[in-house]
Image (cartoon, rainbow, N blue to C red):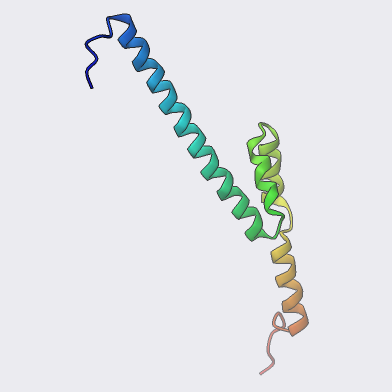
Length: 94
């Protein structure tokens, strides 16, 4: 790439703008990947996948993460109920 026509401060401005674009693209890509990961985590825990979108909202994301951490997950609640119905939680006499 021939940059001979760009002089002094213009070259610096172009490089700074290019770096800004690269940083912005990287931030967008990382945000999309993390949001998809959180949506998947909420889905696997038995919550609505859309709860993962709340991770994009500052301060709300901390509250949502605490809810995920300390609440009774629907998937675990269902597992507990199934074990009680089948009697798998009871010790065997023998």
